Amino acid sequence: MSDSTQLIWAIKTSLVEYISALEDGTITVSGSAEQTPAGFVYSLDAERSNFDTTSLEGTMQFQGSVVFSGHWGMLNVDIRDPEIRIQGTQGILSVLVGGVLSPATLIDFAQLELSGVGSAQDITTRLTAGGKSIMGEQYSVGQELSPLRIAVAQS
Image (cartoon, rainbow, N blue to C red; front, side, top):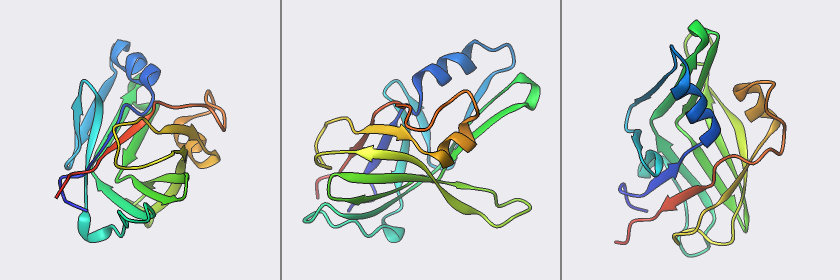
């Protein structure tokens, strides 16, 4: 896979709208992540990925961070360095947490339901228990998040 392969994901549109409406709400992107009208864009770390474009299985490691904050520091959600593991028509999106006072670790954030990677189709995402622990109690396990798209560069 090429370094120009991207993960494009709005994460949760209602969360973006909520944070944007808060008096002190901020959305901060860093690393190689960027915010676009289509959603947040993370770039592929090809060296840390082992996705097989023939079998459409393996791991894609993306880089960057999107942090949602508000309520004077009481709300802080960091979607950092997403990793996608795909096998068949199912997948898991994990994000990196910790790393300041504890070792950084991957937490399964969303279950993916897909019928093919490499096309322009949207991939359904549903919150996992680990994702709920990051997002907060107002969300439920299995709740649908914004669909994501993997833009696979043609080489």
